[in-house]
Length: 320
Length: 320
Image 1 (cartoon, rainbow over the protein chains, first blue to last red):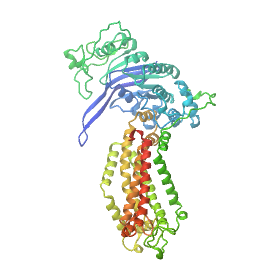
Image 2 (image 1 turned 45 degrees about the vertical axis):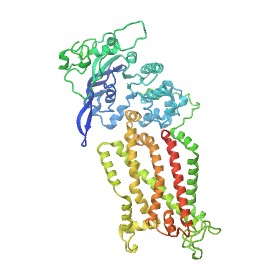
Image 3 (image 1 turned 90 degrees about the vertical axis):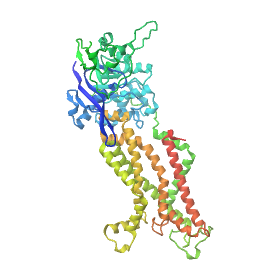
Image 4 (image 1 turned 135 degrees about the vertical axis):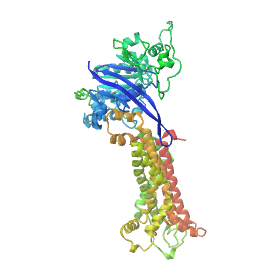
């Protein structure tokens, strides 16, 4: 297994500007030093509450938002060092599927144009072959290829997400970033789409960076899981390891919040107090300290580092 | 290498495709249902034909004078009567449509092209460029248009035309060959594009943040293509609505300039100029002011109905 994507200490800050002169008075630290890698043919799940920066991680990896600090190395190339032309070429190998299938399809284009515009633009196929390619990809994602001249508004949510998947596949990518790709769908449709993701992974030899807030979805699709809190990864482990042996108190709280289908089974919950604190603040210690059930004095002064505990299990907590 | 594209199936040639209905097509269906707007379109269409073929349609030339039959009431020989020089009123109204319609068409077209290209660049590139471009618009907004037009006209038209030289002579001759319409176009062109530039910028700012634009960027599609193929079609609706609502304003603006004597050169007829001439004898010969006013009212009313119809068709949310 070789490493496809390597993310080194990326930070993505958004400046907050005020006043007539638009002076910078602070930063929203959406991603604050995130480190991980993605192997070929692997699915890395990123899970966390809303506002923890998981979508920003996805966009930063693709350089849709360039990182404030740190580097993204994809297929051995540092994306920061590529010029515009090289970047356009590189983008073909890393695609994205967005959360809202109603917003991520251009309403003025037919499905055929949506799917085949990029390959034609990059010269992968001839303009006269667009119909064949569109039909083929629509078959792959489970859409009737007879509908290739229809427009996005003529499809349902699940069908639209399939169009998004076909669009992402059209450039024959190595990696697809799925940013809450099933969150906007009904549960029954979610299952279909997740199965489709799995099948396509084999067929197209794909790696996924799967971003979701849904532990159930993450558990189904991922090989490894990263848990994010306030712009940092607090725990990263193999799926099985993480779900059976969570070490970070935040991960434990998330896992205890998964609803069980069995009403008889009583479960000890560890509900978290309060909300995700503001990402604009500076934290002298652990950002999770004020909500943590295991907090001790040291937590508010020592910044925990992500440390390897063996078994490919990394945790960022001084109490573990 | 490109497995998606290499093995496209060859056997799917004889499939019947479902027809898609684009947003523009749906808008056309809505527009067709609006009887008032369709009737107005027919009216304006006929008017345009009449204006183009005025030489064949009009009973006589607009400058053909007959002193023996001045100030005639509407009757058999002169359908709408004659003016103080004995010129046939109907012919003058027909030729006058040329001025009104060309101001409407050319004014709208130039302000649309200039305003939209200016606004889309400003909105898409943003930042300092946007700031600078919009401040220029603000400054031009502050110039009193009428005053400016009057100054231009006084500068270029006052004095003996035989003594003009260089640029002044060129402008004067150009204006004279257009029957005095050049300065009207300049006056309109100076300001009419400003609101369109602002609207375009606003729409561009909104659309460029949409996920389907982000998707196009993440597919490595170039800036120019995104600007013209992805953003422009999606902001066209509101722009067309605004431009069509502006048409009556332009017709009235020309009429106003002609009314105060700054419009087309006599004897070229324009509805505003005819009203100005007719007002001198409003008590004794009301038909001199009635018919040109009627022509203008109908035209303005019809273009308003078309504008409303377009608005309802292109943006169904705005209806009522």
